[in-house]
Image (tube, rainbow, N blue to C red; front, side, top):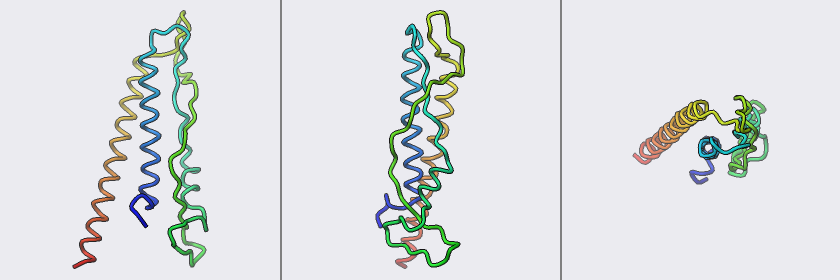
Length: 139
């Protein structure tokens, strides 16, 4: 099993991919803040229960782990896929038909950046723990 096959890393990579795509959409919104008729977009929030189910389906893990007890959680790694966009709909449309609020977009950008940083911190800590476990097992 390679590092990318570890379920924790798969979930974090999917989260980081979602956040990266959201940041791109938010930057497009800011860039089009003065474009007449432009509707602000955002990504549909990822449904955590669906993501969790996708990574815990029994019998779908191809890394060789066996479920020997019904209380065990089987693991199913899945790659990050395309995410759906939707109209933001949180702000009013101005007379030109533009629905971008720079203040709202910048708050979303800051929130997304904070969430991305948290995901990368967790990712780095998980790698550090794996290195520690590997170093100690060789001693």
